[in-house]
Length: 188
Image 1 (cartoon, one colour):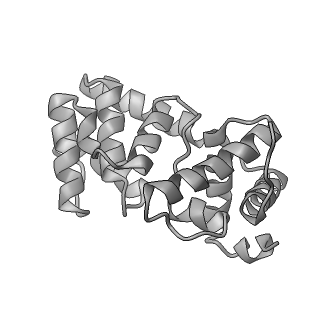
Image 2 (tube, rainbow, N blue to C red):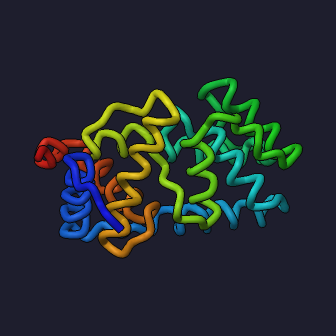
């Protein structure tokens, strides 16, 4: 394989080095996917529906908020009410009712990758604002830009012998924990 090593890939690699040095694990998707599976079992709903609803709620929402509000979509009357995007709530409700994961949207690569990661497929890369910042890029506004950033993560993962989503999760967790304070150190 021929790898073009540019500043984007160098930043991702540098972030991963700092994350590993800080002892940040890359098992975010495994851990969160297991929690969603337990929630699905508790409410007797398929884990695909629960993960799909979580992926629908996630855009422009903190993950802690998604997790605390998700039980309300599954029938838990004691869960806090959803206060995020109405369209996200409608999609989540539709996915839980019908199991139709296509309700995430036909051109929603981030939501689709996030869903697949939560279900245990670690090849897709969830490129959100933090993943873009780590790579020194803007949030992708087109499918081509999204795919380009996802490919950069995939390339670095291959170089490291890691799964792409594991690399993305480790660097994302590292950047989030530092509120982006160390991203300037990644400049190459």
